[in-house]
Length: 307
Image 1 (cartoon, rainbow, N blue to C red):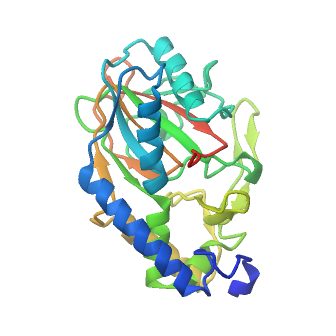
Image 2 (image 1 turned 90 degrees about the vertical axis):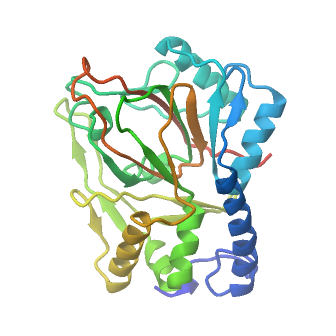
């Protein structure tokens, strides 16, 4: 696909024909991101239900650099209902007011991720103790239902396993573009990745989802990513550039790239991000009775602003 098919201003860092704009943005991005990873300490929050202006500013500043930030609440909340309300208050304080209407979401738009025997949940890996491959959330959603931000919060950690890794989508973009700009062209194709339709036993069906891996929101000029490392129930565009790009990305995500963050979240810790790439190792316990791990997630269609 010719770059002329992707319309960006001449001075845009996303314009594949403008190396000067890209290299200027790239230099600042990598310098700032490397500094945050080296710092690595989470932002400490007194009460997630009553975020202070200083705490909010610290969260926003880190998100502006790396599209994500780890945080820690000083006194972890163990009650699921109380934590759900706190998470919604936390998100509202950050301007994330459009909660996804997920089939498993509670009244606050928060989903409890834990080992489940529910017929509607147990066929899906997030509700098991199995490992989860690299992905962005909502990669199967329709274009008008994009997930642009999320909060993932640990109420109870697994005794063994349940380790997450995170990678800023803009860093993935840089690694791909540095290797070969044609990889970006291929992954921006409107038919780059197809997730087939899904049919639930209760008749709640999801249509096929077809779209690019990388896209730029024209309203905010920010990079968005839609990706999964799954190998079944997925169809990649059948051309050499797409295959090579996917292979390179798979290798990147399996590498020891210094900007991939690895963390086992403990009670009261979490991540706020603009839908960063992430994964999860498997963990102990394969039934609700013998698995302690409880994560709570809330997802949004608007992103964390830089204001």
